[in-house]
Image: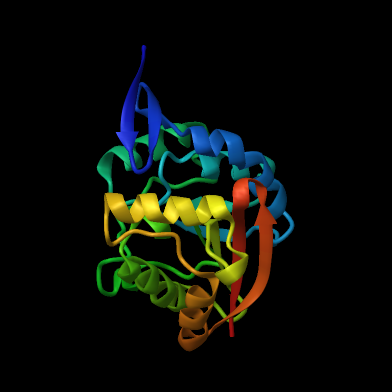
Length: 213
């Protein structure tokens, strides 16, 4: 039997231990099509804040050569990720309890080719974003990629829907908010990354790809 659970900013269905995200259902195909162009053969990917776990399954279904390590600080989300990836155990490892708010969160991890994070930084304190960037630098090799997906503000070119979404988030939690591309790029530049691709996606979302220098 399906039930519903309010997590983050959306209502998610539950089927057994699996959480089902409406936003992932809408966006996983364009995200997969875009990222598939940048995943090198046999890439090792570390996902921060993996949520339901559906992105990992979709992308590994597209690319049977890649390896995926999900993570999340929320125990119910980790259970969902492990349930979704049950039939992909040769590609997707059991989820790790990782929070980018923790100092030195990356110190116990191996080296990965790519760090991927979708729809986290606007529903987390800014320190989670700076922690994500600094930790990613530790576990990525030179020219490794930090890939961010979600809504972003773009100065005077910001989409009206993202400006309104930013207001709603801040009313819900003053530490949340849709982040400016320039603010993220500036922190990345200081931390040793350079913006490589800025890709417009459906529903006024973006994929930002940073490469480690």
